[in-house]
Structures are given as structure tokens and as C-alpha cells.
Amino acid sequence: MNLITGKKNGRKAPSLPARRLEGSRFALALMAAVTMLASVAVLGVVVGSTSVGLDEVIAVALGQHTNPTATNIVYNVRLPRVLAALLAGAALAQAGVLIQAALDNPLASPNVIGVNAGAGFFVLLFMCLFPNLFALVPVAAFFGALVVAGLIFAISSLAGSSRLTVVLAGMAFTAIFTAGMNTVLIVNPDAYVGASGFLTGGLSGVKLSDVILPGCAICATLVLGLLQGRRLNLLSLGDQQAHSLGLDIRKTRLMALATAAVLAGCAVSFAGLVGFVGLIVPHAVRSLVGHDNRRVLAMAPVLGGFLVCLCDLLARTLFSPYEIPVGIVLSLLGGPFFIYLVLIKGKVGLNG
Image (tube, rainbow, N blue to C red; front, top):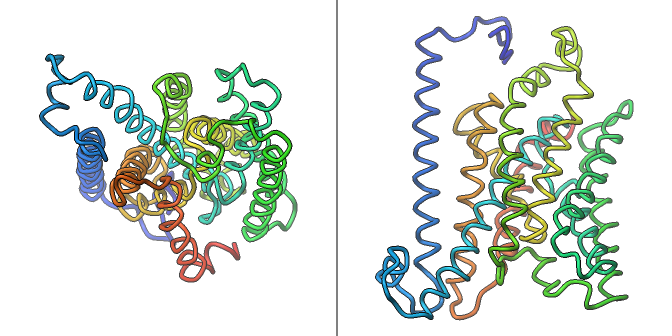
């Protein structure tokens, strides 16, 4: 659909009542998503492998005198973990929308095209070289994500490069940077404490201090991503038509990829190599609110936070008192979903 002229295949745009109805549906969908997000966040704080229950959580929240152990678990374990899940999910979901729109590829996402792996490699390398500068880990993660995003953009800009080329190039970059991470860990096993959880993507042991700096960057960058919706709608019309409407195509794509790199890099810095959020959520959002990137960019962070928080809750309660990294749960969901996209939407996703 031409989101500027309002035409699709020669037909007129929807009438004003129809557009208002679409707006009402979007508002209802957003309200429902926010309600789901709030509910799973509360469950994440209340439910856990320990015996701290709802009554003690409420007492801690109200500042009443309670068991010091309960206070410690709520403030130093569950709350930072829930916050980290919400921020990582929101960041990776919107990053996926931006990457898919910039590359015009529904199979692209931060982990599929190697952005997560690049960020992870730079984090491990940075911690190997500068073990005392942990506060700068988000900067290293962003730089690694930006390097891979730039390489993917260069490949996608080559004459005749197809969507399949971008996906295959991303898989190659993932293999290269994964090999780099393994090399760093072999040469210096102490490069990153808890590297096994980092490589699979996990939130166990995350502290509030780990989340504050990248969390602030994520919140600011999410707003920047929202502001790109109109330009990405123009970009979806095709290069020729977008250029005729005055859009700087190269600048728009670079801005979208840079924004996605910031989001993915910040998320990787504290959540590790969490995958498939940026692949699953954009498609789910489009099925709910349509293809208007302004709405997709607004809804994706909400559903992304919900998905990661829900999966993390399942990861730490299904096998209580043991837990598995949230990245494993998301991979179990994302792997089949990726196959579904290849099989069902292959003509659209690969041959364009």
C-alpha cells in the first residue's frame, strides 16, 4: 500500500471512517499489549524458585518491615531481572523492525544477520583487553553491532544483491564472529565471567548497575526509532518512488541500521546473545496492526518486552529449582518460526 498517496494497486485509499476504525483497533491492540506486559512483569517479580510470595513482595513494595531475605531477593534478583528482560525485549524487537525495513527483508533480524554476534565478539574482546572498564561494555557492544550492520548494508547495496544474499552473508558473519568469541575464550578463559550464559543469552545474575546505563540509552534510542516511521514508510514504496518524493534513501537506511545497532548492542551488553526476538515480534505486530511502520515501531517494543519477560519467567520456573537461559527458550521458539518464514513466505522473503 502507498502510505503517502493512499493507493494500492490502483484502488483508492480507505475512507475516513475506515481509517478511524483502523486507528481504534490499533489503540485497543496497544492497550491490550501494555496490559499483558504489565501482568507478566508483575508475575516476574512475584513468582520465582524461592519461597518469597505475593504477600512478602507487596510488603517490600510498600516499604513495610519484612524479612531481609525477601527484600534482597525482590530488589537485587527479581526486579533487575524483570527490568533487564523488558529492556532487552523492547530493544531487540524494535531493532528487528528497523533492520527489516531498512533492508526490505522479512527474514532479517539482529541475530540472523550477525549483529548480535558482532556485538558479542566486541564485548568479549573488550573485556579481555580492558577488564577493569566494565562500564564501557555497552560502547563496545554498540561498536561491534555497528560494524556488522555497516558490512550488511554494504553487501545489500551491491548491484543485484538479493534478500537471500543478505541472509547468507549474515549467517557467514555470525559464524565468523562466533569463531572469534570462542577464540577469545580459549586464549583468555577469564575474559568474561559467566561467558557460557552470555553466549546462550541469559539474565541470571544481572544487577541493576548493569542495566542503568544501557537502559537509559535504549529508552532514548527507542524514541529515535519511533521518529523514523514515516521515512521508512516512504522507503517501503521502492527506491525510485521514494527518491521522487524527496527521500534520501541512503541516509534513511543508514540511520535505521545505526539505530538498530545501538538497540541491539545495548541489549547484548547485559542480556547476552538473546536471539529471534527481532524476527518473531515484527511479524506478530504486523499481523495485528498492519504494515504502517509508525504503528509497528510503537507496538514492537511492548510485545518484545512481553515475550522476553514471559520466556524468562518460564525459563526460571519450569524446572525449578534449576533454570535454563532465556536464550534457549527463545531459540526453541525462533528456530521453527524461521523455518516457517522460509517455507511459507519464501517467495516474498528470499526472491525479492
